Length: 606
Image (tube, rainbow, N blue to C red; front, side):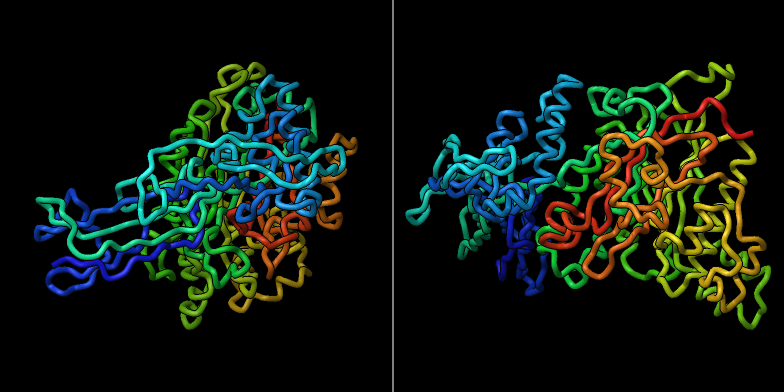
């Protein structure tokens, strides 16, 4: 007979919007052990498993802290209520919590005022994509005195109680909320305990056989979301005047590009990120948090790195399709990797179908380029060792797009408005600086060929795993590498000598260097300059873990055909590392997203 041996949950804390799939270990009639499901719709030898989910009917009034979602809130910012900031973001667990979060919290007030003033939109609409957790206060009331902090006031406040159908179980009140193995908590579940039941039943009579296996969750918490980041104007008119009701660029000649290493689930282990709660590292949680963040930026083009093959096909492509994006993907090659092919990551590029159409796609496999290089210039006795050093399974995805927006060549009638976007992840260990530089050089020479064949603006985005001032960064930002650069000394097989001259002719400039290069200081720019490295004109960091803090992600553009209009504000290390590094419950990657809005210049390269 079919029997249930063991049941346990994948995470200790259930989160709104994150699917829960309990681990159920079964003994089949033949004595074999299996985790395969046997639902009522597909019985096995006359037996099946019945699943039920319940929510406790808690009468206790509790509100949830917006910063520490596992903590009960004791204070509420009434300015948030006045300015129509989503109510969930107004609660804090202590005066210290509120004070520590004040700089970011105040930005919610400013953005709410600005949005209503400029666009006439309720702030809930702006933040809605970041916050799917309802009010954040469920069966909740706040205790404690009113507290002033800066210009904001904290106060207690009542929260309405909802009603539900109740089933009595052992003197406790429970309401049934689901009848499948999986369950996705909703905003109605916040601060409630969930109960999962499974039992073997006869398929014909549905009569239970044996014991009912029950497991309880912790209280459901709302999904923490990153603090919204503002776009900072660096050139031309105020960016807020250039956003339509969806937050997208409304100017006929502007568009926005996001570059973001989202952290592959295969790398997001508790061993590597021990400081992050395990529930916040789980893919069901992180994928929803990442999606909310990415959609909230309203970028026209998305360049994502470390996207697993199965996650692209099963999640990102269909979900972003709902928001008007067309998807392209290039998986890393697998000469080195020998695991599950579905978990191999790669680069994914998305673009809005209403703004661009695809003209051509190029896929760069550095392994093939390595084979060609060693065939031509490496001695036979060293070829195998050189290939072992060069082959890292890295790739680049290049797409040529044609814009559907704007004045199609008023200064040149009939000319197509094209854009070339390169997306790459140079995932090479720091000991192989020659390989990093060779891969970047190979990519740039390929882009040069495209530039020669078509007069076209270019963007080069990605995680290059190289810091400002390194040889690869110098090649990208300056077009050449100083022959005396110390990293050129690491070249055991003469790989770099085979590339002829380490230079290129593309007029590339780092988008975020605009913060440092501005002559006129616009509102908010001075604060961003303090988050830049004056020696390199790059952000102080784009990757922030307990083991490493530095910049490895970039958006480069051809400065003769494009100009930067605005940039997504940088984060400061203190705010990220006050409680922990990233990833964290709020930020679901160990990298931060970069976003730039560009304007096409009237004149392009000749």
